[in-house]
Length: 231
Length: 231
DNA sequence: ACCTGAACACCGTTCAAGT
DNA sequence: ACCTGAACACCGTTCAAGT
Picture 1 (cartoon, helix red, strand yellow):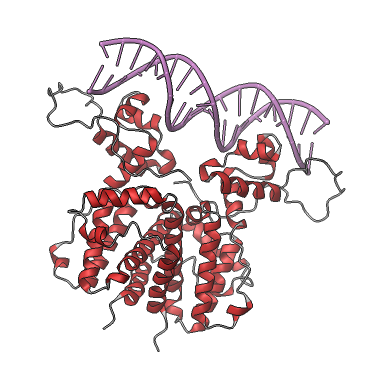
Picture 2 (cartoon, rainbow over the protein chains, first blue to last red):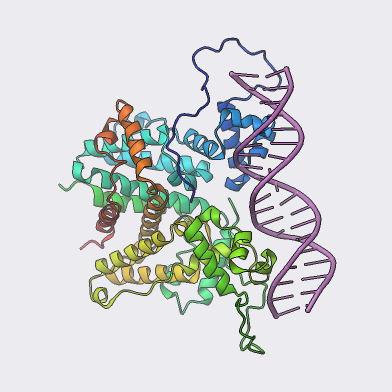
């Protein structure tokens, strides 16, 4: 398990204030933190977590590998930056703004999940990395909504962590488990062959159930039922 | 994201029936699937997920790297085997056997979580690997208990997946997030510096809360409250 | 049936150097 | 201030070979 870095500022200068001179327009725009991160996201989307390689990243950027290290501490840093860049929250649409707390929470968490599923590598990365500003904003908003809804201060952290756990578990599972339909079919068949050992989950067709969105919503409702302030 | 293999039988012969001749006792016991898996678990416990290397594994076993490939398909196979080997469930103790369904479910899930926390690499591995026999047994037992408690067939899969999601999310987070106390303190301090942006989670000290066991239980109770069959 | 070493095509990162 | 190539110490796996 790799150690976690707490988002400390990079040793690099971080481009203070105005640049002393506008660089000439070039065919290959010069390297920058932003360009590196954006390209890393592209690469991760296309090739998955193992597909991100410093060498491949440099290739895509048309630079030498070691040039990256001027802008970025190391590969871990690239992961942290790519991750947070993908978790931005645009806020609830007008429609939802007016709804009750429950509608707001459901929207926030469905949006969070959807965002991670658009970049399936992000879900499994999130729990092991430092929390960046975007994810902190989401937690803040969730926290404020629950608190405003009347969840007691003593229950607040437990409520937030339950929702976090549920969303993370659901999304990680969906992102990595749901890749191949025929894998799941094969697993269920294996189950049928062994049905004397696993009669109940064989009968309920647990591994074939593929209404992921519906199941997510249903479980979230269970949890919110339990969370809802009494009275 | 690596493709998932559905636990298909190895191409290797799998030691059929009686061995033709008992091998001479040697100082270095000969390689075997079991020995490889056990040593892989040791290595994972000691060095974490990145610490498992075919070369290091072979070293520990006193063999050449390539000898492993006779017993095992590839590194993915080693992960699958190590994972399932760690998820065995001994069943509820007598004390719990007599309890109500809720007590049983809580025991099963706390045991599941504890087992994974004893091997912190296992939690983050589980969702992306094929489900081995031990984890299927756990799901079967959970399923049977909920069904016996009166959860409707139509809700059963959703109930199981909610619990799975919650347990996985909680355990993955705890295993990878909780490594360093001072990391979390640093994060909370950063939060305090930025308290105008994150007033609510700063006030509730979300990132400092370290009663993981209590929080797990509390969230599980929320979820079970919502799950419990009406009436 | 079981084990081996050499070789291939990769990795992330250090270092000393260029402009 | 920014970029580079060579080099180091690693990886997983194929292959042809040994016993």
